[in-house]
Image (cartoon, rainbow, N blue to C red; front, side, top):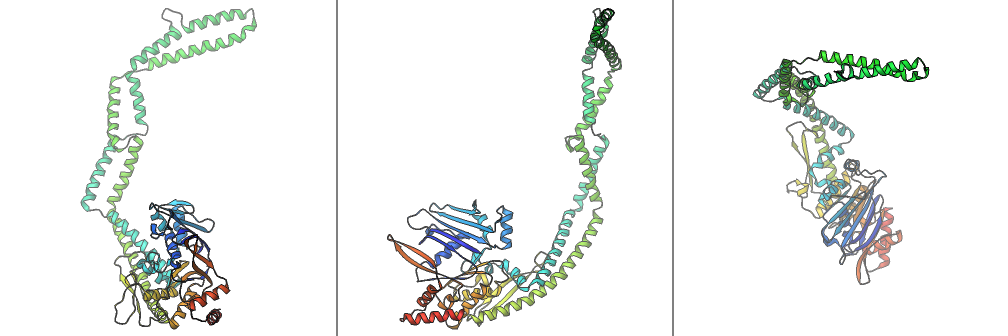
Amino acid sequence: MLTEIHVENFALMEAVQLSFSRGLTIFSGETGTGKSMLIDALGVLLGGRASTDFIRHGLEKALVEGIFEECPPEVLEGLAEAGYPVEDGQLILSREINRSGRNICRVQGRTVPLTLYRTLVQGLVDIHGQMEHQSLFNPDSHRGLLDAFGGEQQLELLKQVNQSAKNYRGLLQREQQLLRSEADRERREDILRYQIDEITAVDPQGDEEDSLLQEKKRLVNSEKIMGNITEVYSLLYEGNGQSSAFDQIGQSRKALQEIFRYDKGCSTMLEPIESIYYMIEDLASQVMSYREGFDFDPGRLDQIEERLIQLQRLRKYGHTVQEVLQTKEEMLKELHTITHLQGELEDLRRDKEAARRDYTEKAKELSRVRAVQAQRLAEGLKKECADLGLEKSSFQVHFTALKEPQVGGAEQAEFYFSANVGEPLKPLAKVASGGEMSRLMLAMKSLLSKIESVGTFVFDEVDSGVGGRTIQKVGEKLARIAEGKQVFCITHAPQVAAFGDHHFGIQKEIINERTRTRIQYLTEDERIHELARMLGGDEEAIALEHARKLRKKIQ
């Protein structure tokens, strides 16, 4: 529901700020006052064509802003998915048109591309006369409208059909994944067996490569290792003609022991040197064991080199041994799938056929119900059209069968219409515009508005070319549509305007030699005078009395 609109420098509207609520809102005024400009501005706000011709003469830009509340669930869902959630219950839209041709669209104060903007605002308002904003002109919406018209029972049946279709489509997709050609499967099986055998023959172990590389490094540098370890042993213990660390510590130990005989206070030095003495002795023993145990085997180095080459060849299956082993596991699973494919396919096909039978049964029942509701819709619409002077009109829901199970059921639906006897039925989108189209749309909205999620409907001179008792029916139907909804109607007919819950008068005024449109909310007394103006006639008193009677009759 549109609760506020702000328009700046849009055609003759210099600065217009209006607030709206539920019910039927009437806009009226003399011819040429710019009544349709407001609808044009609303169309721009909803993503319609934004011509620079809309910009007020002498200015560089025009602005249209709107606040919507109680938006349809699908609109709120789309906004949330796109990252523009309506958290406080208010959706704020704005559109700025510049003479440079640049358009700035904003949702919740954030700039968005025009294409996304149009998608997000679709479904907020249904504007008669602008096909891009009318669900009834979109054949893709007709099946959904028919199902909604059928009520909760039909919608529940549709839900079951959709679930059955999804189940079938999922099984079909799985079958297509499995159904490679026999030659492809055999070729793939041969490749998998070869690759698995290649990895198995090498039999790589988890951290084997790191261990081999470390051992190779030790063997390649064996001479350096032996030279250094010998030097370490010599410095620690042997000395090779010079005093070793063990000898020097031993001499120091002996000297401290001699001192200790005369001065017990040196015990703090003696104890550590005793510890160092035995530590060096133990370390020298370890070094000797390492040197004696070090074995350089050229044959072992060759074995390591050969093993590393084998592991290197497996790099095509993974950068590490762990990755190679993981690849092997995946190959084994795929090989198992291929070798057991025939049995799996047979099971899958049985499940798929069962799912198709389930879908066919449910879809057949939905088709039957749809046919019944289509007839009911046609009968209801015929009555609505007859009220509006279209007694000879015909309406039909045209079904097109769909071959494969799919969400939505076994047929597509499209509304067809003919206004006159002998004229062929045509799709709504191809029916010529004009008075007949206006009345048809009003009839359909009268019948379907309660089930449509759109909360705001706009009718621009829907009473055009209608007179007599029919004009009264137009007002009645607009009022009925407005029950629980929001309806805007631009009209020249006082019989229609009298039904309004709210009434705005539109006038042109000249200020500082510039013409501008003024839109004013009318009080009850002002409404009576506006209805009298619309009724016309030479006697103002008679027109006023007639206007009062019109309002009293409606109230």
